[in-house]
Length: 308
Image (cartoon, rainbow, N blue to C red; front, side, top):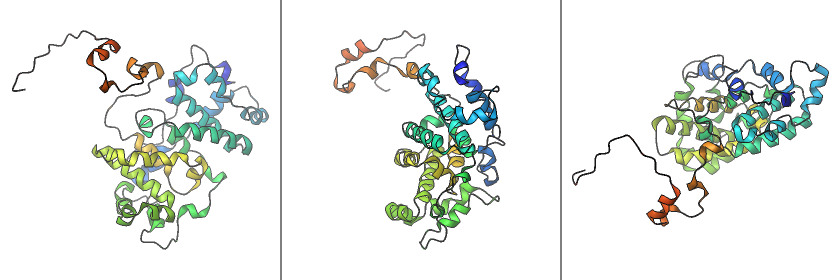
């Protein structure tokens, strides 16, 4: 099982890059689902978490354990925290597939709590296809109350038609959602709109965040906390609600304009400045110099003149 695979030769990238979506991500509605579907996830999950030698009858027993705990104890949480969460997701979806309700309940709580602690911006800078993986599962196994779909509500916002935008293969969900996402009644009273259709408001804020990301608008800081609230919902409710949360979230991770990879670990992010408890701005420059090691540069620096 997995503990035998956690060795010096363990390659996180082999797990991360193994799965590829069925099509490229775009703003065309026809590509929304196929761009966030990983058809080989089951085979990968069984191969990585359980192993090829385990019989079908034994899989149920193995999935009852916290398999990924062995990776964490071996330093996986420090080396690759996003990878550990991805492995948790693989096991969670396998317990869902095998109808192991007790195991699913335990791991989904653990997974949800861990997901809440990671800002969405981290996933945007990462190559881990977590939301495409979640979108690939059959959440209809557990289902969700019909009220989450917001069909037939009597309100100024036609939430049912808004949800159907993501099912219409013609045109662009990105463009067709604008009239609902920026509906004046939602902007004027988000409290009332949330009482009417909470998940509709969630996905509206998500799309607003993506517009801010694409236009490099400062409005990103406004909608970012709202998007983080989505991760406080149970994964199966998001998946079975009828709203394409995971597909749209995966689209957002592909919006970045740069080619930088931000899969940093704790060592990469360590800095003497992080260990200092006081606000550095309130300290004299000499204290800053004591904390920061100055490096020589080969660049020629032109002194600033009075004219700039």
